Length: 157
Ligand code: 4NP
Image (cartoon, rainbow, N blue to C red; front, top):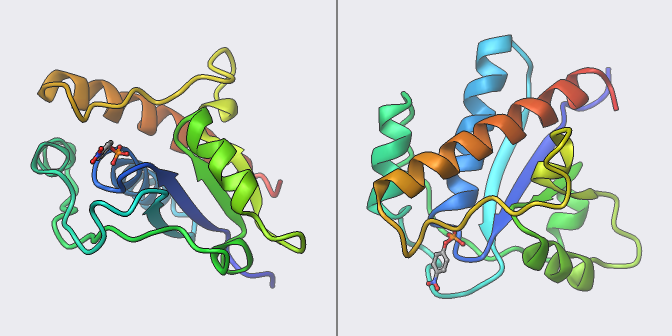
């Protein structure tokens, strides 16, 4: 049997969007009974070692997931071999990932909302300078994107 898919979600700070994507993806995988591995990382260094933003923690909790033990980390070149899929939360971070990717990378790199018909090329909105309602909007986007991604992975692609 082949290894379960392993997905790394990547945003800028790894305290808002990508931890929420990781949480939504884990929750959906558990709901449908698919075995996956998931982590998240950032392309910026500001929040390494920190817990997710309190507003992200609150929104995740409202949707049934405790993300308080998640810790910010930087994406690394090793990740392109460790994970089967690396998923950017917006086109800027997708460009950073393509620039960082080693020539012999084995991970498939994509944009989260490219997996959602009609939302191709779109960024998951960055809620950092917003209020809780913007974090709810982010949750809706990552829930949609991660469910679509999971359907593809479970379908064997
Ligand atoms: P994230 O949000 O990339 O979704 O985690 C941000 C977090 C921190 C910063 C920007 C965006 N920052 O500039 O520190």
